[in-house]
Image (cartoon, rainbow, N blue to C red):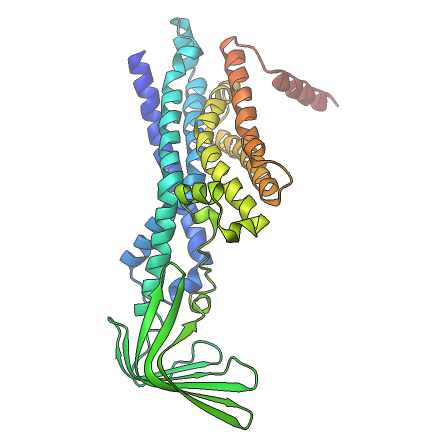
Length: 387
């Protein structure tokens, strides 16, 4: 049995790696198309793109790992059923219960890995992704103002600097004209300036020193002298509409979510929608990774029930079953965020239902009995064929 378990575990690992790599590649390609304006506005090389995608991987892996675990278990036992290996093992006195340790151990390992990503990897990846994007915007994008060139990339904003140090972000003899206010033109002139990026707030600004502000409203002209003055830049326009939302619960660490839930700040107390999102996201970080072991156990009897099914059809079947699971999970998340249903109950219902069906399915498969649903399906197909 040790040899059998090792072989099953090894096949699980191979199929898991293949499924994860394939799904991750497809999702990253789709995400790349969504962020094409962001990448086109930056002077990025291949290494820079790979670095950004590494930071995005934890966010995608949290969604991919449960289905990859399900696919690996399903395809392994579907092949064993198709090759009559189950019959050969049973002829030698090996029951399906004795084959369970390998998929259970594999599902537990996937669950632990998914929990690590959920608790730590997700926030680490998104924080580094935003920080890197802001740094690229500061040093490599169009806002890296060229010396002696008028920059009009932002609507109703014009920038000019006589000398520019791109690495340090230092500017000399800076001129900015702001026409964003109706019937008012603000012109800032200063001998020194600096491009600043705040990764925590997700914003960029130009800080001027020892300059003057010329504010013209109609025929009235006001002149002000200042020591320090900042012009904040609409970074989202520069980065293809990418939003930097520091208070997005889906990108927070588990520690920050727990602190906001246990001791909510004033912003959360006065925003009922944000409070529900924090609560729902906190439950989601626990419920979704547990889906690895749930879906792995669920796939085990399903693969045995569909003996003789081709692998391409089995792949479509397992994807369809996961779609049912994820649809139920997504509906529970939406209901939890709107307050229509408790997330503590709703987000765990798909896991409990699929776990129960999987346990019953293992019992029926070991007894070589057909599930009532499968009997009804076979009866319906025969009735359709006769009619």
